Length: 512
Image (cartoon, rainbow, N blue to C red):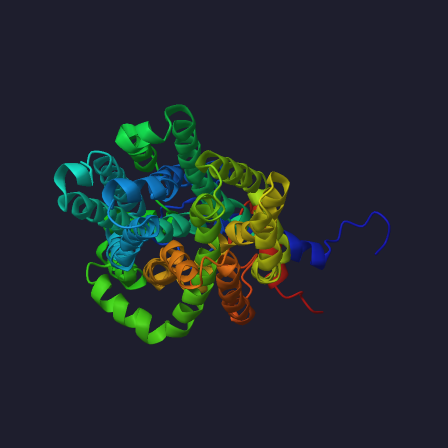
């Protein structure tokens, strides 16, 4: 082309036309409540909204798991208060059996709250589970002891544990789905890790309060009345959690559903109802059959992953204080103090694990955690068994390092297993079945096995290794989902520039 020529470059014209089309698309995407948007659109997230939703979900999750963790750390004391007859082992087994009872109704809670969240909204269901958990925990603190009312004391304890378990059945599936649907694809691991950060905060708060009471009150006062205080704290904390849950914004998917029914014309409503048929009032009956008929391979994979994950999780975060106290004869406050330090260390690195699984993939991090438990369980428990403070801390560090790889990754990996139309229900059913069968029974099974094998202190290590082996197999068969859209959902990006790059990458180059 001659110098100074004003003739237009065809390639430049094509590029400008493409940018115009891109800008038009982004203006349409910005109208996030417009019911005419289709699933082929790219969702450009608002980072402030995402952070607010993640904070509210994580803090509410912390409140809920504070309530649930209290029972774990008071298991020995609760056994003496509600099950005083027989040996110390029988009392502890009865206490852990009552702990496991709450997990038996979790699948029922998941099957109920999952479809309910699809019909009335995520934040309403999460607020309801918060109320139920706080009420159940508060009422446990009011139950008279076995010495006062006899049989009715453990009966009431079991009843309120069932309330706790039923409410928890709607917690993880709802909270993880909520965050997964809000987060951009390339940061889903990072934002999802804050859900488990909330779990650790709840457990840490429960352990800290129990440690403080054990240190200041002593054994006699704890048995007489001190054990009640952490349960009674659940009342005001429940109000705080309820406020946080009510302040949550609904996910864009549910907002779109509401807008379609409120503002659309008749034709658009029909289209919206077809697109969002999984949100209808008849969804529970239809979707349960569809989940088990079409999603059973993924359900089995989910149950294997969650089962292995929860056995290792509950072994370290729930059972370990009892192991240190009952088996190694540590002071109860010393065992809790070591666990408290372990959980604080996990809290410091969990978001880094979330970033790592966004960058390198979910499978490498999950495999590292499962292999860590399989290879390091025996060395870790040999260190713990040695009894000195440095050795116990070293063993806990090995177990904690393996666990944090799972904690920081699972909340992003599990929602991505299922397509959008059955995600909430499938995840709630699969997750809670696994927790019911394997997670909540971990303290009970380990205690029973140790009693059967003459107090063999290595039983928890062997049980952990068996769970980790199942987890290794499950991770091998799962698909990699990092930096990819959720199945059945459009791509979700953090910025418009990222959306331009995504569309440009998917648009074939013009040929001349």
